[in-house]
Image (cartoon, rainbow, N blue to C red; front, side):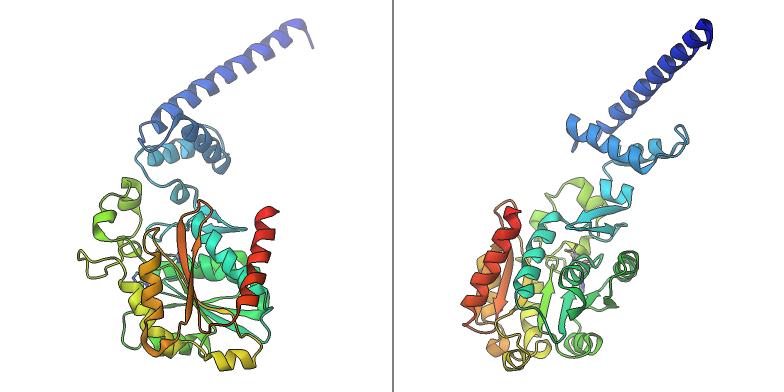
Length: 335
Ligand SMILES: C[S@@+](CC[C@H](N)C(=O)[O-])C[C@H]1O[C@@H](n2cnc3c(N)ncnc32)[C@H](O)[C@@H]1O
């Protein structure tokens, strides 16, 4: 190579670098118009968007993504997926974006159930399933011993949950259902192939006054029906879904005797995600539900130490199983 050609190559490279730097600063400037993003966030998110849109620079895809993010659209909708524990879950508006706190508490539930090695098959139903993230996580962690069925009011959510099951090659059924429908219990049992051993849910639980204070990116893009705990739209306490779930338990859960016969006695029978201040009230709702199904409850915290789930057992016994499940979880957290 001649000296002149080498100099030419170096200066072409330098020109490209400076163009790339200019483009990066322009994109970062654009992203910073989103008041929810710090400088650090903006830099990290630009990196992720670049990885998601690697095709020819200048084709406009990256710029379009930055533009959407600058207007406040959640990053997960722009990228099209999000991590949920070990799984990658497809996301599409308006279906709620799965949160890491949800993955945390339901991973702990899988550990508590897994300590009993479900065999024969254990049926689990998930109400208000959204993207299907909870049943898919449980199926992934528990293996083929668990039969998972998810239910949601929204046809968009059910379509997305089915897509997620296909993309992850995980076996789970998904069905449209309004949990307040008088025939909900019947439909849950029918679609699940019988009464279930465990009922789980991350239902809408935000009272209207708290909903109004949520960031614009949540209110403008995620389905209000996925968040508002009072389906009537009124100024209630946000706990309507927990009352509904407590009312479904006697008609949906297998009896503890049947569970004992199958070697599944002492298992948690209901697990619901909650808002950080709702633990005591939801424990009370589940324990005073019809049929006296739930005898004992615990509030579980998330990875930030905030109350995040109420878990209920149908018997007072099971302290051995509980101690064991804590051991498994502690080990997992220490890994
Ligand atoms: C908080 S989101 C939870 C989604 C998902 N389980 C998760 O953890 O990401 C609540 C879900 O409840 C659904 N939903 C709202 N009202 C419902 C109803 N009456 N019956 C069944 N599902 C309902 C919404 O469509 C939404 O997908």
